[in-house]
Image (cartoon, rainbow over all chains, first blue to last red):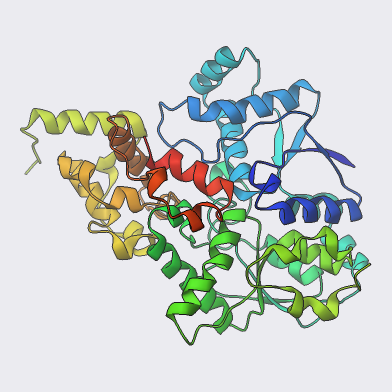
Length: 292
Length: 133
């Protein structure tokens, strides 16, 4: 199975581990990602002002280009890219004014025909969690994992159509299939503070501390996410949190595709596990194949 | 007694916010569900519910409060509003009215270098799109 793939700007820079582990783990499951020959930034955030059509142009152009190649699906893994592409696609389907304005501007004739998909959906619906389970060697047995969705994957529910906006379970289903233990905690869809890390850093640190403490209190040994900004906030802010709170216990925060890659026993150099602040490798050491 | 807005400026502000957001602020019944879950509630001087009230009254203070810049557009309020109001769009309207007048809060030069070089690219693009003119 071959699916067009939109990596997004962060995956070419700070989140290479997400890009590499997505490609490697999906390839191991028989899904080949064909990166778009040309792509631009998706716009990062969906414009919430009704008159801001310019904020939708980049995503609309990307989607129209994929449709122009005769494809019917586009895969992206970054939660922000997924959110923007899917919401703009929804506008192209349902908002006639936006569709006409954007098509006129781009000289395209796109009506939202592309289906924007996330690797979690591919794992569940195309590959199947049972098939994934059969490919794992149970090397994650006993590992306690908390799933963190954040905002962009699940909200707004109607446009995203991803999972229950208050209690999504798709990542937990994957964790169970990988043979690890799911940790339930109340903060899986609360916001880490997102881009406010640049403007209201103290607020984000407080939110991150609440989320991490909650997961740790429930016994989590690792947190997984699909968003490079959540990953950064939850992981890299732990340095300062520890500095200010002596009792704070650090916890590795990795991408779900990295955990998937470890479960599939992929070469560790393909997973980017060394790129995090809290090193997840000691925790996963027993599960890892030796360095080649 | 029906609430009356005597001030012409008030009516203009309300119409502008309604136009940009596509939302009807008068659906709000002030229940506070938005504020209970809000990501930035601890450092907002006005909770989302209170911002909604100011909009209903056409009070220009809604345009000048810190809360609109603390919002992380996480959409928890939008997801939970029992009246179906997309509050995030109303907060965005308040921001863009400011931004289009050049009033911004995120200035590149003021971001600490050690943060600037570490954050993922998406933090910069999203932050600048939401908080700078």
